Image 1: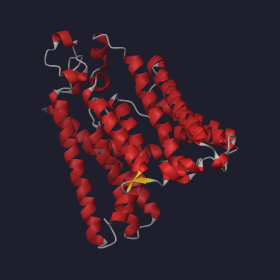
Image 2: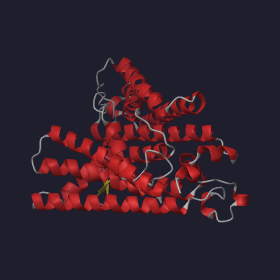
Image 3: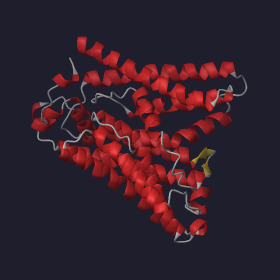
Length: 353
């Protein structure tokens, strides 16, 4: 049975809804099975990549240093990927995440520059974090409102948002990365600090992943997100405000882009205005590789975790064996196309079944 044929009913008429989803919707069994299969095949690909590079570069790959670097490099993309998972599950897309990250970083960085610069206090750091999160969430919610109320395709809305956010950031800075955008306190703690040998960047990304994995799998918000992607018409008939939910989903994506901006400032100490043009490609690749369907209604945060590490391992492994950077971009693009192709084949198989 296809996703569009699933009829969604209020809890009073659906006694089999598990209590953990808020009592309103049940995640269909076929959806759970599909997510499990997706996670399995992506995990096999990840293991195969690790095995290949370990054999190709014995003693140089899969060392503790490599694992730490892969985890740190993947942390920001993992946070962004969690938000993108929610967006794509609703059959949407967000191409603006790299620009929103830049805009949030510029807003926070400009405040820091004018309130102490690198030597700014913890109070200033806290305000900078709030600014980045607010700018990201506000921009995301605005895009969600246009998608929900203006009935404009998400592709067009977020493509426009990509250019607009980047343009505002460039106007504010003259197109140059300002000096002193990050406080030393922020860099020494979140950027370079560790807890029991584990970088704080990795811990933060893991906490965000666990939190929103639970939200998607065990709350009403997550159930509604899956249901909207499966059959928005049935959701509206059930009395669920689809438009308001989409605004919250895109707002969540923006919020996590703002958090990504904080993490970037902590790691690199600069806004890197020109350094995020391919963030959307990398994040969408990871989410689709993790089994989240571009047609909506299916996906999991666990799958996204695996999907994030596939390009990270691929890029690191290619560097270790001496492949040029340009070929790394080609490899990521090929992996994305292959993932979408496999997703379409799985979808057709389910429809025939």
